[in-house]
Image (tube, rainbow, N blue to C red):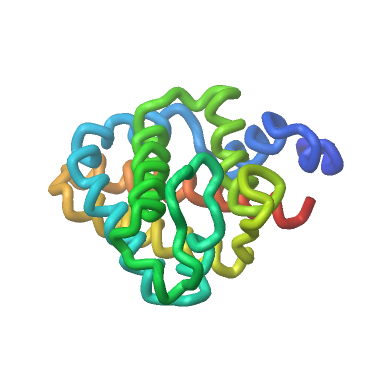
Length: 190
């Protein structure tokens, strides 16, 4: 039986990632499956991003978070939610960020830099990083992650991979998204 330093899980990102990854069985074979899917998924990223933003646009509870100034966005903003169409420049700006995130997941090494990046994804949706005016409630983040997980599943199932590769890829992305969700959730508990 391993002894886990539970307080360290809250203060040491690498230790936390190592524990969660080991507990779930996320390892080199999963990373290889994720990276192996990059070529097939890359052309589908714009469609995935559009699907995410179409879903976000359907709810005031999610769309309202694009009205405040986004960190790094220098263009003009609408004064009200009703004045923020899906083709607004701030939405194009946010879509670029999501596209880069998806590309990063399937192409970059899973090292300390990646762990910091995945942790920052959670932090930037709170007022702890980026814009102090943005704090996306955890329920919205959980709903979004569930939608993204299902979109990944549907996309992977549509790639026509051989069964063993399909299963390995689905399982790898499932574990990865649970790790990402843990790193998002931790920002709400700290």
